[in-house]
Image 1: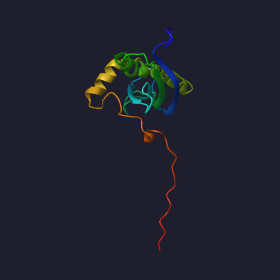
Image 2 (image 1 turned 180 degrees about the vertical axis):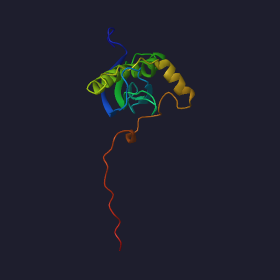
Image 3 (image 1 turned 135 degrees about the vertical axis):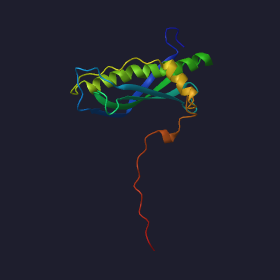
Image 4 (image 1 turned 90 degrees about the vertical axis):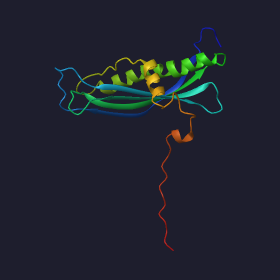
Length: 167
């Protein structure tokens, strides 16, 4: 590992899903009332002990009677590599703490760009305490990570079902 290289590297990312809806009835003279929800999951890549896939789901929603600008739901997927020389404790801190935070920086940009051309202007997502998010997730029984990254987690092509023929 190069001494100047951080032990965690983002190698690629993409937007997996994106839904946006500007809501009618928003009053710009009143503070917006949306709730930001983030949900990170970490998946080890099979046969690559230092590579991980991180999925970050982001939602910005308001209750039906609140003064909400929009409904925004999206998920980002990032691929990370941890230096082989990194001790396990540091690797866990990097993957479970820093990787979702890195993706959240990208998520803030996605939200800003998506909403910028909407009727109410650009939405800047607030900051998130990922230590608290991960502690809450671990306490809920959801665990810190999925057991493994399975092929079924990848989008797949739909194959039309063939109709059964009567004899």
